[in-house]
Length: 105
Image (cartoon, rainbow, N blue to C red; front, side):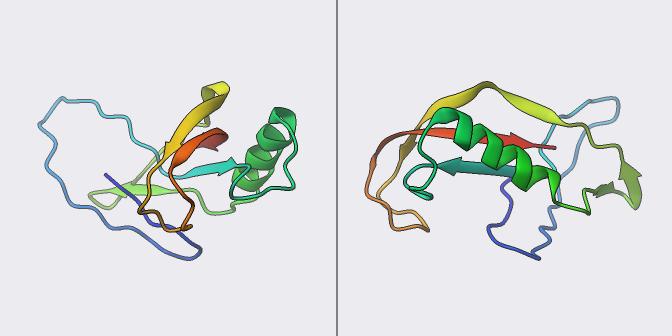
């Protein structure tokens, strides 16, 4: 269930989940790499950036059939990982392998 990119966008997804099935999905996710933000000089700076950016989001909610469901903070492990960028991406970054960090709920 892909989300949206940018601020103030609310993705609405419709799917059918069988009764008694449990699911895990991200309510929100934030990721960064040094191609997107060259001022992040090392892994610690990337991790700090994602924590600050995910924690400043005020409204964290998911609603299923009109019911708010609880959100849990799920940190990525490892905190820094390799990410292969594709040629056709919204940042117009050329395809390559980069170090990235991410966090989410």
